[in-house]
Image (cartoon, rainbow, N blue to C red):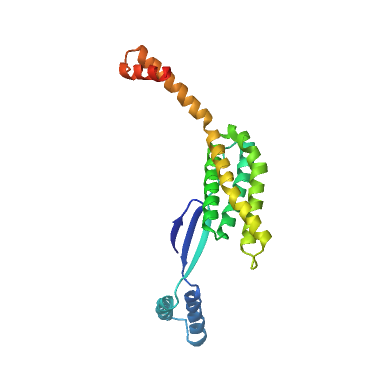
Length: 234
């Protein structure tokens, strides 16, 4: 059995090349027919039937092509090890999976682009939570309240877009959803940015301490120091 793989961010699509089982049945039939028709009490009888079996197997294997079966194996979700955070991650990624299915059924390019942005931000948010489970509380409201609403709204949009009829009410509802998508995208961006606020503050503090140490040891460029003082004065 040979395998080929196509890897994406969700998992591996594995193509298995499986030989047909029919050649084995043909070989079995050869032994059965030979035993029924011809004698098999001499050692060379077994040699004869063996050679016939090999020939039948080779010919039938070439005549009957192998089957190609595609099997999708999803990646195991990256979890944090913290029970409460992992429950939130599983729930949140479940909503992301629903969004990924919904977007497949939407035709309008601008809407698809916005939803893909939202999905991208959500993946980055949950990957960060998996690394920093102590921040799970910061996205709890988003997972429990915002995401279910987003999924429900976009699921309705997909249904309306694929209706065979067009009405004023459908067009109006779809227009409202389309106008709200940039706001939802911006909200997800802000949520991701908020998760990195502590890191940004820590970096700023570390840089300040480093600059002071360099200045105290006379290792910092004086022009750079004067420029920074002037900038603070301005």
